[in-house]
Image (cartoon, rainbow over all chains, first blue to last red; front, side):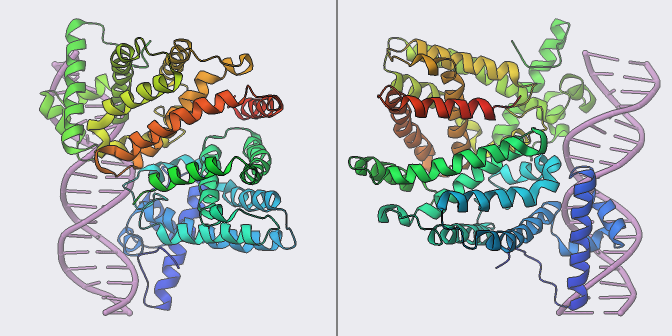
Length: 227
Length: 227
DNA sequence: GTCTATAACACGATAGAC
DNA sequence: GTCTATCGTGTTATAGAC
């Protein structure tokens, strides 16, 4: 379930790959994305530049690998925190706040990461075909967040909700990248205040008279979805 | 009212600057952003690379200059189209569709542009201090779009509305960058269908009982606004 | 076949002479 | 205001070691 392209054939190869990746991520944290050159990564990892490129097709692919490991970690950390929690707003808040928390060490250099992800032609774009497995994994996780709650979801909405929540999550990350507040206080405030709002919005669709509006909005979303 | 850094002192300087810029934009359209190297721009413009850098501090600054001229052009083209139109939804649709229309020749390479704009540490980010004059110009334009309409805006909302509409505009651009539909049909559909929705949303705030909700949302926005 | 290293390329950007 | 020469970068070609 990984989006990695390179697949080392041997144990030693896997070790070298891991060494290069962890070295790169450490240097990204310490010195930022731009300041961390491929030459420095290779030197610090004790390998040659050519060897680094044997395992990672480009510098951007190091970010892709980082993101893959982040998804795995997110699931591991968030699941225990969700255990026993049935309120959907709380489950949403925990899920997204955990993700932000895990990314925190990289926030100062998020711009460097985000830059490449924003390019729709880049394989790193969250909407790219290369990112499809990772994206589907995340959407599936949001489906679990919903199904583990006691919220009753209108069945018209059921199919689309996980993907919409993932989109909401992307929006939070977009805000996080630009957030300059101390300890990212404003991002957490955003999460704390919008998560209940999102759930309230879902509830609104149960009201009589809003059925038509919901159908209109869902139809719009389906029309606009990339094909 | 320009965000340009370099300001040629002489007529000849202004001519050279213009020559480099128009050459660069033509090459961007023809061959894309990445494929258009500074060396090629300089050669095609008949100047040296060093000279190009005398007028534009970086390749990104060429985009900044492009965006400045786009704002001017947007105003020129949109204003006549808005003349006599009083319906706010229509005015919104015209304003944003015109902008999309003007950017259309560059759509194939929008990723290259957008990439740098997405980096919050880049001066090209629409949220950066360097972009403040351009951003304020655009927000002021949206204020005109509103004031020229016959819509009655709740006075609590009046101050924030232009900036919120600008944000809505940014959202449309975000969609546009990723839009792969023929002739950007989906982007225009997005505009056609969300513009009335936005106006309907403004109208909703007039309903009794929603006053508290509006105040809550505005308070949230004020809290989250970068400082 | 799997992995590693060295040398070189084109790019964005800069220094310094004129 | 304009040029040439050069730097450090991401990336690649290619030869060779395990």
